[in-house]
Image 1 (cartoon, rainbow, N blue to C red):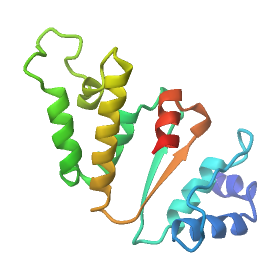
Image 2 (cartoon, one colour):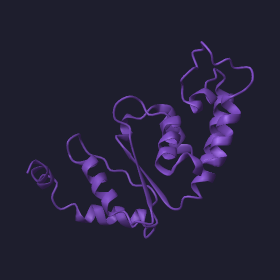
Image 3 (cartoon, rainbow, N blue to C red):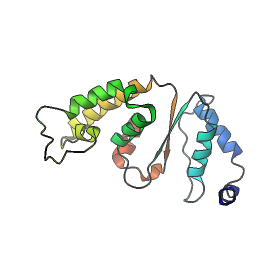
Image 4 (cartoon, rainbow, N blue to C red):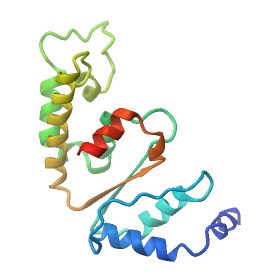
Length: 171
């Protein structure tokens, strides 16, 4: 079996998995774990195993940064898909507020068909974009309080966009 052959390359990760389960279960003072290794050493496989061992009471949300750049709006969208859009009342209200001003004409507009969070953050003014992103982020985390304990597992973090890296560090 090809899957078993692949797993045999990554034997004895019991200690690492145990440590990570303690972290996500709140039995450790650590709240962030960084798994660092060269390509092909099984980091993604380790996260898949961790998801399987995650206690049922904890929401495990995997986000993979591999491929096209993952934006802050895609992280919000991933969470909305995972938990259901209806859970994010505060975030949805702020997104609607910022993405539907009467002055935007969506017909034959470059904004047509774009993610509403991207529209809300589409400003050349860095200060305004940062203020809106902060407001959306605050709403996002307020809404997350209603879903219970949640772990976001970021795979291929080293490839994330600088804006996303800054967002993750600052919040």
